[in-house]
Length: 111
Image (cartoon, rainbow, N blue to C red; front, side):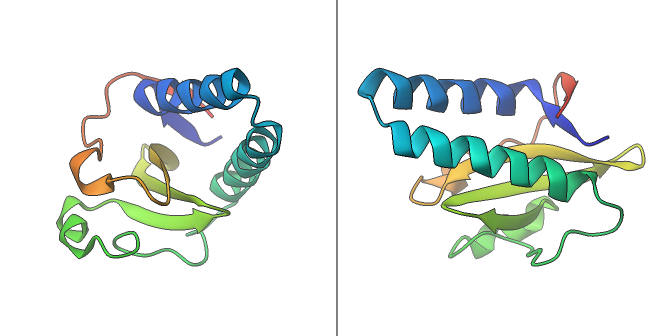
């Protein structure tokens, strides 16, 4: 079973609440679809396809050791953790990721 950090869960919840509050039903549906795809991908054996060392134009983030892939408009950051994949970062594609990337694992939860 793939895992996620508590910080990722808080970020995704805040994003979902923002979409709900603004009435962005289509964005909320796409977020939910994305989360389902991410859970499916990270629960498969082996390295997810399309993995990169850094997202988009953020080459400086390669040194962090986080692997990335993109689903819909979101960049997904993950690392190996005790024989499983751990979701560590979740960003909308236009966010300033290099200044918001999470490297502290903190609390670990099921995905």
